[in-house]
Length: 322
Image (cartoon, rainbow, N blue to C red):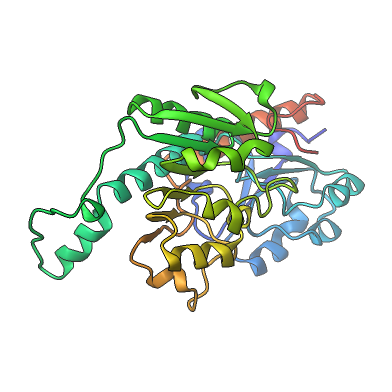
């Protein structure tokens, strides 16, 4: 159990997000500390009963955090947390799954539309003061989404909403998920991961929205990319390592498919010498798909509910991992 709120300390550890500012108006009586760097995290972790973090987490932190009993992850992905280390230290963990479902699903659609409508090209032309004339070459002309087929890999909260948004545009949607029994989540049909490569030639747009697991690591390899149509779009709002990045770079270099929209890469930040930076048919956003004005409040809603459950001695958390 956690102590009562007037004896509780929460440490918010994030380089940018303003959890403290958004938490103060709630008037909970909980003491708050904010850390903007790993040095500040190390200096304050011993005081914390609750830690809210994601990228700053290190699996050696429990050794210097005698009071820590609960970690609320800011992100849906929790592969950075060693479950056995947490269990041994008696620390509970909950993920941020669903916190950014609206933002990431909308970001995937934004990438798709930007590439189909050639918005990056228009922006580049604007910077050069170029007014492009009407385009007679079909390969260089803008396109529309209606009647196209989207394959959405991963039908959780994010992927399911992507499927429903694609349907709203009149697209045919094929869902691919680990457990087919989980249902179509708005897709016209649903298949398992083992069927993916037989489905890929049907894709006008391939959208990755699955978690990074042992089953999805390297799921999109050179063979998979070679199965895409030359006119296809490839969108990744999942995790960079779901894709074999050298194979992706080579496929982009060969123009095996038309465009790629990447919010995630294998290494982040994307190394400055990566060829992806300079490919005009690749649109890169710096893992900002989940960012929104509502992000802090969405995380805090989960945290507050989980703190209340732990204070009541309940065994089950929202998005419980450990």
